[in-house]
Length: 306
Ligand code: AMP
Ligand code: MG
Image 1 (cartoon, helix red, strand yellow):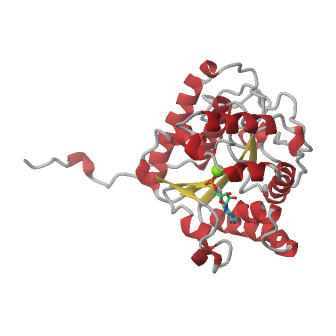
Image 2 (cartoon, protein in one colour):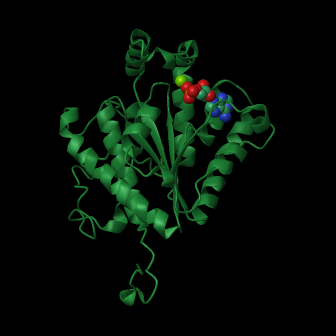
Image 3 (cartoon, rainbow, N blue to C red):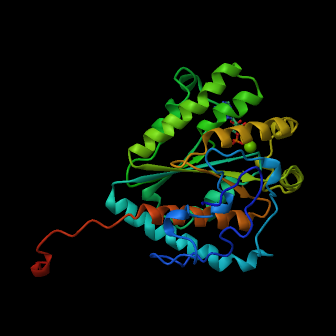
């Protein structure tokens, strides 16, 4: 059975310490490749299960204790992403959509910087979503996201996403409950459509504690180079912490599917968060098995004229 998050419990020892270098059919004894969803199965919200967010410790880091211990491993994962992305681009048959969601200061920007830092910008695009502008607001809610979905051969990164339309929209009462409730099914259909068309969807909730958010907001205020990131609105939003957690919990439970799973990433430690996200993406890309297209026939005898 895949070991995912269920009822807030982390299955004990699930995939603990599985080496990312166990590739090419070699898997942990007792597990088969088919058993094992890519990446960190322990953090995957089990499709059809009921995850309790409060049961997931945002501060956990497996056996790692400090950043130094994961730097090499992170670099390995980044290199895997870079190499696999090259194949994905050359193959031009499948794409990947990475969705990043979090509370304010949860680390969406930092994750993008540290996980995708080495990827060829030609094959990857980041789309950030703020409150809809008037044109976007005049369309169906998925319009702007669909327009930014990656093409085959590309990796798309959503910094905030269609999930805002069941998160902030719900918490702030921007539409009626019957409207946002129906959106879970519409989102599942949207993601199924992408999947059916060769675009894999991977979703990460960067899970930080309320205390950690306070520390990060304080750090932003204290550092002149970070102050631009601070908005008084962050304090207003923080007051709705519990409502947001409930909205995230429902969104994750309603929309974690086999084809488009949610991962709840312990994100109090930035270095651990980066590792979990990077490895999950690398494993997913590897499972997609992108291949360089075959070379044209008859190249053996080709010489380049002077
Ligand atoms: P930031 O990412 O900090 O620049 O903030 C972007 C803001 O846009 C956040 O306060 C989001 O809640 C808000 N936002 C993003 N998507 C939506 C949406 N679909 N409807 C309303 N507000 C949104
Ligand atoms: Mg912000």
